[in-house]
Image (cartoon, rainbow, N blue to C red; front, side, top):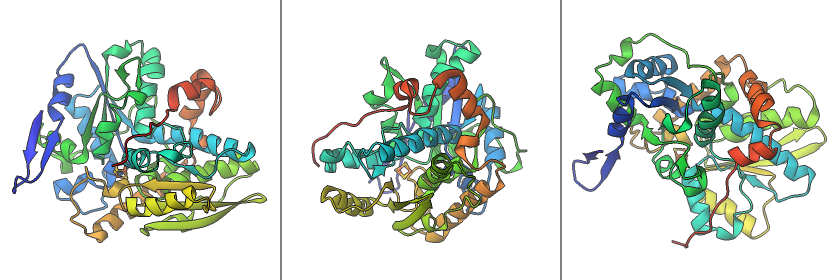
Length: 380
Ligand code: SF4
């Protein structure tokens, strides 16, 4: 384990890159890696590229050259999250269960509610976050399909986030004492590894993510920015609730950099009230409204980092420069527009996964594998 020390010695950043190299050098291990949506629009900055340069293809090539046995996209886990979260939202609406539903992809925000609002733990969605869902499927469905003992699979997540390191170790998210995700590294740690490997990143050709579990949609890419999770959920909930095709998939009211965004989305006869809060100060305001019984919302997305994961603490430093974050956000929207399929429930590999393995979204097996629970923790 290597430690990077800040110049003033006030802070240290623990790197877990040695653990990844160790796994890659172990011939008995099948080491796979997944990359979060926000990585592709920021990694290039660490190789002298402009903020917002989309480097998805080069990122995949670099990981393949580093020796991973499989290179995957957390977007697949994000599409799976939407299948479960949209189904959970509809279940709650149709059965008069707890509303609003709160998204819970962000582990820093999950820790916040556990410590600060333990009386509201029945409110968040019970879905695991996308990279944990991916890790779970990798060690079950993928392991079976490939004929590999799950104990020999090492799942590495490249995340824009430091809180994801702690999340991967939560006992609630392990199975029979085994981790679903074994090692989490940040965008900065990945850049350090690419440099250590002597790879000239900017000169790399593009490659595609591996299959199975390789197909992804525009809905899953937008998880990388605040508002994206709930927008992706609306794309699916709209079509499932109305049976009609959603022509314009871009929900402008849910986009942009405001700390709290509000929208009313008309779904058939129903008007769903939606909010997006990024930054924990904004999250607190939204949660206080819920605690006081004054919340008018059906669904709320919360992200701890202002702007969402594009501005996460594991990303290249942006030093508070909002322009850099905005360029990353525009790149995320651009990547969504480039995708042929932009709705999670139209992802063919996801549909196959349900048909062959999981059963129905929000059904028994999906619950067992893809959902979790929360723990009330001491107020701090
Ligand atoms: Fe991590 Fe920030 Fe994204 Fe939350 S919003 S998952 S803390 S990077």
